[in-house]
Amino acid sequence: MKTQLRSFSYSREQVKAGIVHIGVGNFHRAHEEYYTNRLLEDPAQQRWGICGVALLPGDERLVKALRKQDLIYSLTVCGRDGKDQAYEIGSLVDLLWGVEEPEAVVGKIADKSIKIITLTITEGGYNLDKTSGEFMLDNEGVKHDLSHPSTPATVFGFVAEGLRRRKNLGNGPITILSCDNLQHNGNTARRAFTSFIAAQDKELLEWVSRNVTFPNSMVDRITPATTPADIERLNRANGTGDEAPVYCEDFIQWVIEDNFIAGRPAWESVGAEFTDDVTAYENMKLSLLNASHQMLSYPAFLSGYRKVDDAMHDERFARYLRTFMDKDITPYVPAPGNTDLDVYKRTLIERFGNRSVSDQLARLCFDGVSKIPVYMMPNLIKMIRDHADLTRVAFFTAAYRHYLKYKVDDKGVAFEINDPWLTEADYRLIASDDALDFLSLSPFASTDLRASEDFVEIYQSMVRRIQEEGTLPVLESILS
Image (cartoon, rainbow, N blue to C red; front, side, top):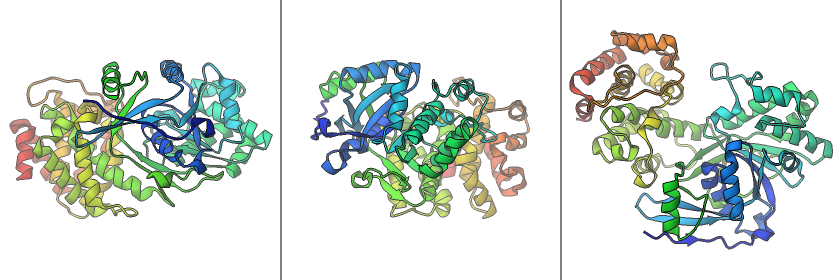
């Protein structure tokens, strides 16, 4: 099926870079670049073009592909109705590769025309210890940059050296805006960068405390990795020879705390939302989107499904998730801003079922140890406190145990688990034949689930029934 390519109409010669973005991956190119591409149609906003920065050796292929096509690429937005729309994106007006031209990266961060540094470096890119939350100064790259500030290798070293030159040149304040998909990402960025700078240059730290802001933001758009087969498919549909195309879902959201010390683009004119506090939006996303993904993961995988959209086209799983959202989560999630929660929940069900941006259930199952404490436990604790209906969350917990303990789905297909943060103590609890031992697993550490008679009774019943009947029959009984 052919997809019409919608071109931008602004002149790129008139656009100046006001933003440095570090981490020019698919999500950034489907999200911040998409918003900015639309914004640049306004002549009054054309000082907000983006200079991309890639810092990793593995970025070479993408850098060369984008440079070959003058940094212009295609973005295909896949509609839930099966209709796609392709856009030509021109907001990336410069691209620097730190491996090849480190001095240019430092100089661009120091440049007076740059008012914002945005980041998509992944959660692990902030180099914070998972247990303590402290910045890890013993990281090899970090140790190098602390000792060799003028020849940086890490994002922390590059930003610190750029800020140091900015300070020395008198080029004014700047905002560092994380666009990574993690809770209170601005606070995380502040902790990481100021911890590095404190260890390297106390005078710079003082300047940063007065001249750099770190707003929190909430981002949302499903953007799959692009395979060679995808490149061929997208180009065939768009009629292009793009070597770096991106595709994504049609839903997009960006909520940003309005704390920009050196000015900002008018992203609100193209659909972003500015707020004083992003917390309520984060809570909504964590409690509804992320928790629903988690609720789906193990039961659907055990039922024999491997793709999210396939599971969601099974009406039983769609109803299970909508009931979870309505009865278990909505009482604890106030609607932020002018959000219509019913529309948001209905849209989530549609998004999960979008066949054009199919996701793997194995990815949702991955690393439950890190996800469950953030996505599931805060509301589960409130539900236990309020003596709410615990049926669905007890079913989820029993399915999680079955997934980790038996490693075989209901169709007899064996699989390997991928939960890298399980401890030796966790593995002993999983191996135990006493299902109550599993409730002491590290993801549940924030509360004593064994102390809730209501939860324990339902959970033990679910454990036994999943083993005897299989996951789907138990799910059907819950729905009836």
